[in-house]
Structure formats: C-alpha cells, structure tokens
Amino acid sequence: MATQKLDKVDTRIMQILSRDGRISWRDLAEQIGLSLTPTLRRIRRLESDGYITGYSAQFDEQKLGFGITMYVWVSLERQVEETLKVFERRIADVPEVMSCYLMTGEADYVLRIVVPDLPSYQRFMLDVLTRIPGVSRIQSGLAIKPVFHRAAPPIPK
Image 1 (cartoon, rainbow, N blue to C red):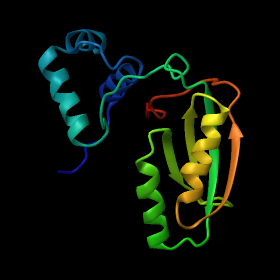
Image 2: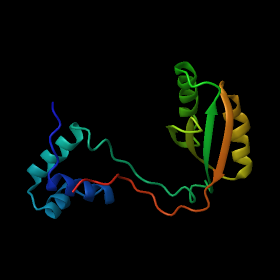
Image 3: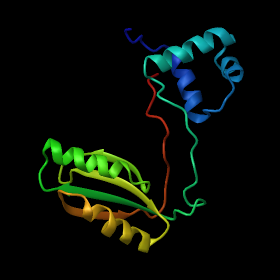
Image 4: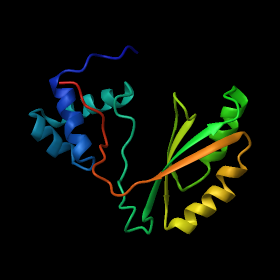
C-alpha cells in the first residue's frame, strides 16, 4: 500500500501524541476537531504507513539508580560486514546500552550507556566492550546533565 501524504490533521495528531502518548482517543479526537471514528481511522493509517512505530513510557534513569550517562565512540579493526554484525549482535544484548548508532567519521559506532556509578562503567568497559572481537579503539565522554530529549523528530507542518 502506498504511503499517503500527510495533511494538517495527521501532523496535529502526531504532535499531540508526541507530547502525550497516553491521551485517550476521545480526547485526541476532540483536540483535532474530528469525531472518534475518523480519528481512529487516521491513527491506524499512520501506524500502518509506518509514521507511528510504537508507543512507550519514558523513565527517570536517575531515580532508577543509573546516575551516570556515558557516550562511547567505538572503532573496529576493520569495517567489514561480519565484524559489524558481530559487534551489533553482542552490543544489542547489553542492557546498559540505551542506543547504538553506526556512524561515519572517525568512530564506527556511538553508544549511549547508563550505569549506576563510575566503577560500574569501568566493569562495563573491561567485561563487555574490550571482549567484543574486532574492537580496536574506545573513547568515552561523561554526560554532565541532560538538557532535553525529544521523543519525536520535527513533524512537517
């Protein structure tokens, strides 16, 4: 099925959901000025067309005991398909890794890691990263404080 062009109502739905993913469908319909049935039809289309890929809760990492956020740049010995696959499979199983991106530039990957404290990060480095075959260089930076985090990219108007 071909993806339809977004209109102003679609973008309004996505803007509202990006701020409050738990809004009731009835309240959402009221805010966009449509009845419930066409609102639900639009939401289902946005989901099936892949604009809305899921719904999730956001958590306070500090309150959960993860007081340290590190950004880690990882370089591999060689950027060949098998080495990339091995790294990605191994890192995907590590719960402290909140995100992982394949990059251009000096590092092959950038990771966002959360740990309770610096000794935990040291254990992560020694027990996880240095044991993944093909890792040749690791650089890290400590995030001092979160300034903001967006849950959604800019939505076209």
